[in-house]
Image (cartoon, rainbow, N blue to C red; front, side, top):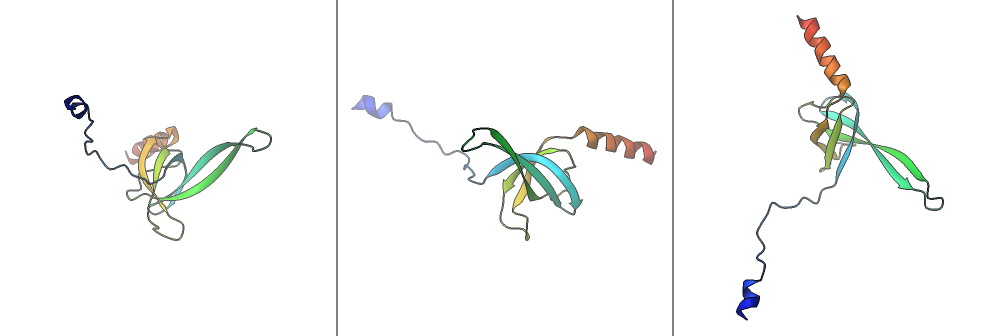
Amino acid sequence: MADTASTAVVATPEAPVSRRNEKVGLVVSTKMQKTIVVEIEMRKAHPKYKRVMKSNKKFYAHDELNSARVGDVVRIREARPLSKLKRWSLEEIVRRSSLSQLDEKKTVAEAK
């Protein structure tokens, strides 16, 4: 009996796992204030022909700091409805676009 009690695993409380959906996609537009448009490419096998088909879907996401730029790869997370179309919020910028880095250099050079 003592052996079974000593081998019992005690569950330790960890950070709560979020059940909110996350997606990774490409920023297509940043023309609105505090809003970005993220395009997600989904690949799915055709039910009958088994050929892999691509389909794109756009999501409107809330970007509080206007930090994302066109061409960036970002992670968005499901959120409560923020407007008519916005149901996602920007979680993190996974990879910056090389185009946005060129634009920064131009603006710095023009300012001097």
